[in-house]
Length: 215
Image (cartoon, rainbow, N blue to C red; front, side, top):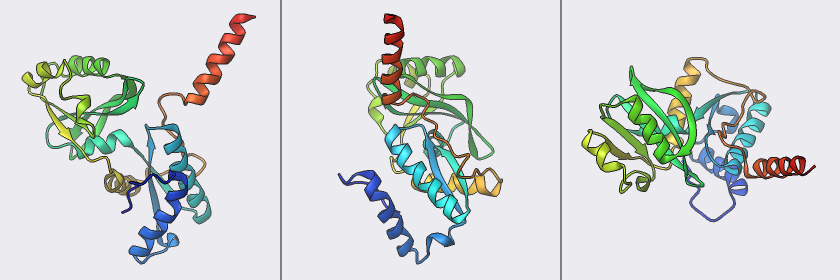
């Protein structure tokens, strides 16, 4: 496994990192049967680089792709318990979040993944599981601990599970299960789950909307 823990641009780091991992395992890229990749949610640039790389490899070698949710990987890293609220910093005062339920040894999304202020997600969880007992899984404990709403949730039996930000091993495990179940896509069908529009798209739509309003 290789971790991007340097200041080097991710786009220039990724391919050499893949080559190093393959060399360490004494295999070639042609020996890989399935590619597992996170489809989001996450930053526009990070997802674009990762997905574009996997698309190219899948097209060249004719392999299937397991598109894995980042939030599902976070929820899977959470400890025991039936309910897991997975969340990660989404910037702009918001979080990427999803409520999961543990069923038959795996986590299953309840409703949809979303991006919203953390207080709004907390209210969604409160309405869904009023009795408490939720595991809040996140790589950033400051999103939960110390928040004004946390004391009430802790009294209801909730707990925080700080998970690793390095999700590649878990994404690989989930991807392996998806491959066994035949839940793969090809290079053309692989798409990013941004949830929120990119900054460029937001800026363009805001500008064009203002222009139309000015006419």
